[in-house]
Length: 256
Ligand code: OOG
Ligand code: MG
Image (cartoon, rainbow, N blue to C red; front, side, top):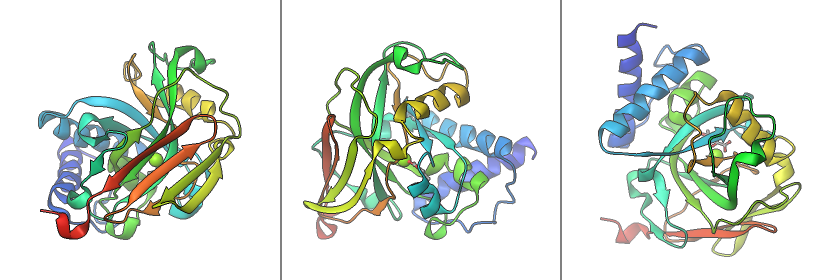
């Protein structure tokens, strides 16, 4: 694809997010993951031009629960910005989003740079925490091809991270997603590539050089399927041994 065409794809996705409209899958003519990551780069650059600051790196489709839900079977990655950050315990206005979903994750905080191809990624980890990711596809009905979801910055829209703690063993920890105290999804950290540290190793393999710098948050990918995010509820994720993270959503009638 020409540079102009890549830029047009990024602009279409950017406009969809800004105007709360969706694109039809297949409308872009986007094929191939290399072009898709080029579009993602341009899409994120547009957000940065509007003042967003890059804060993190996210992996997607690291669990079979997610791959099955979305019908996409390859690991993908995207970028997180400060504009997507939801403070733990805060109230989040999802009114600017199209059709948000929420999913429970594990987050890593890098204490030092994670160099490409690092075999022992734990050495770069300063802290771990339970996390919630809010995803919001800019495609109709969350229906997309692999290149399309990559171009769309892997549906990234928001993320909340619980209290950071020094790394603990993350193998086979129970993961719960609750809405107003009702259990809506349950799984295990083992669902994330067998162990969330494998997601971190994948990040080291896939991230462009310099992206995984000290202070970067890395989301390992959802351990369960994502759940539609309702208005006016409290959402909570718990990872056994790691703790909880939660936020409330603004009631529909209270939105401005
Ligand atoms: C893409 C985002 C996938 C995950 O944790 O697997 C993702 C989507 O499901 O729309 O963030
Ligand atoms: Mg996710």
